[in-house]
Length: 282
Image (cartoon, rainbow, N blue to C red; front, side, top):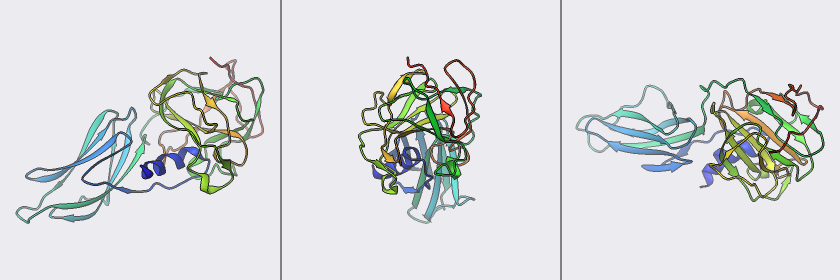
């Protein structure tokens, strides 16, 4: 699905911010593992949102045209739907006025700004035998702007092991791309892995080389190999992009500040230019 790629890949594959598109659904359709279904009852039209993902989702319904249905009090109805659960939006029907029609646009964002992250201190997300420079840190002046301000870029040669920085489950991945350069046309064409943690935060590992070794649904442990670094997508040089967020695309919380520890457990000062020692690989 083309529009699914727009919702996901731009947000994670590159270090540049993108906007969230709204996407029109037919009467019944699904994206990710989130489905919108419409059903008429004698008194209303019911919009049922089923979330089959292991994370909460933030859903917005914008009703562009309505016939014989009462409009909602707000322009866009927003719901946060818990993992593996359902939310319902109902529009009251006018009595005896003929057929009902609704043109609805829906936006879906994995995660929620309402998540309260725990105080976990993350491991370094790469292995190998050599220290690597932090080439862009929080509030970077290059591409870590706006919603991407709490992202980290580690400079490293292609093929460096990329390791899980925290235990979790693989939520999403994209693999198979080979091109990489500082070209906005490649924003959607980076290999990446997204891992969801026990507090529903999500870690993103971007610009990987083709050949990711994990699959969606795999449980991963801190220090476990996810893939290898590369230069795929919108990337001026080989590096690993890493960030943790509450939401894939939306604000607040698309990226959040984190702390990181070295292989001996000491906290790292994440200052641009710092040389970061690799983590131990499992």
